[in-house]
Length: 572
Ligand code: C2O
Ligand code: CU
Ligand code: CU
Image (cartoon, rainbow, N blue to C red; front, side, top):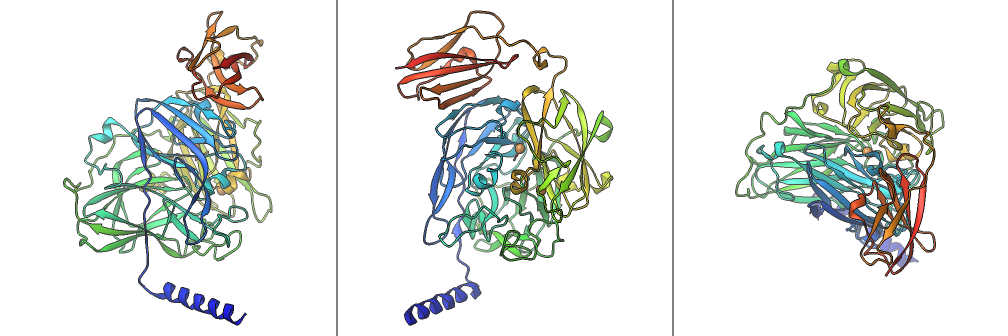
């Protein structure tokens, strides 16, 4: 007993000494691997990671033990994803910021049970930008993101490529995903009744450090928190340049010393290290102290559901050690970056308003328009090609980060005034901060994709709020197109599968003309879904080479009538 006490006393004294000494110890920043090309193979799985000393932490990862690979895509490419769910729960994976068909979008409706291969594909239409992918299963988004499932997407295009910008991944162009986590006594992630972490994790690394060359470097920063906002800056208050928002490059760089980044938002910054001595260091920090109540993470408590050791303080995000310059360093920030032409309020033909409702002190979870999310209720139908102005009014006690799928928008007013919109948020956006008691408006065009079956989402990106029902959904409907008409009489698709039995590919052969297949699902002999193919590319057939031998059922959903016709095949 006495010995135990002495041991605890020594440990306590030791940890006190470590905390109070200035000789910080750092861990090397983990930088995700990249995947590029046009086919991306992703396996979502349960895994373990050594985050703290002692016991390992149960995490979720994609081809990795926390987070996932950075997918490098080229604008104009047709990309195919093979996403295998080996996670011990149903997931969905959403391509945040990507302009793509709703059936490929990976929202809460596109559930991927364990063991299933999901094969979405699309043509990359977004300009050069930093997007991300993450789980979106209703009521489990927080848990699945907290465990670490997610990844970056970097889109390149011919415009961005001609600019003199840092572009060597992991050298002068570094992605940073900012999160914090709380751990229990066994080093396991706490994700219930807790919205803020106590440990800063940068790319999953606690107390992260990195060596960067003595020149202009580019940091692509994503806030992938549950709720916390970041007010970012450097420890010597140096000026840095915002070159891109959520949806891509700004027209011109914006010089700042601080910038706020809310959940879901991305910025790309350039910071000049050329005047720093080799061997010197500078910290990227969160200057989160002194934020008004309503800024997420500004709450004073240090523990409990809305408290944390990182609340309302300034803390380091990344320790940067300055190293020798590379052979051909970037030496300036280009004065002109892009030539975006933005929608204005005058372009909008429809105005919609969304109210932030409920929440404390009302006692109920936050919602939008007093309508908590319901999976089978479509909140809005938007005519295809509409240009609309949406105004989000926060009458509320707390700030929120409003996000919408499908499109990138232009923020046109804060509290009714265009002058209220910050230069730092002047580019294409898909998330916007709506501080407490403020009103923010954006304009967007709902073009290119329409689909009355699968909806897109709009929601608060605080995953705890989203899981709590602060979400709605919309379909984009083409009223000029017969496929948008709902009440076509049901009819069975008339087709054969060949070869049958099959070893590698199964082809669908129709016995009538003009069939449009919306979805193919392959089910095994005990009724489990094993493959999901949204808007299947019929002439290519179904690649069944990864399936075990046995009997399977192919279900084809007709695009116009939604009727499902099932056929059997044998995998040999
Ligand atoms: Cu980042 Cu609806 O998602
Ligand atoms: Cu999204
Ligand atoms: Cu919210």
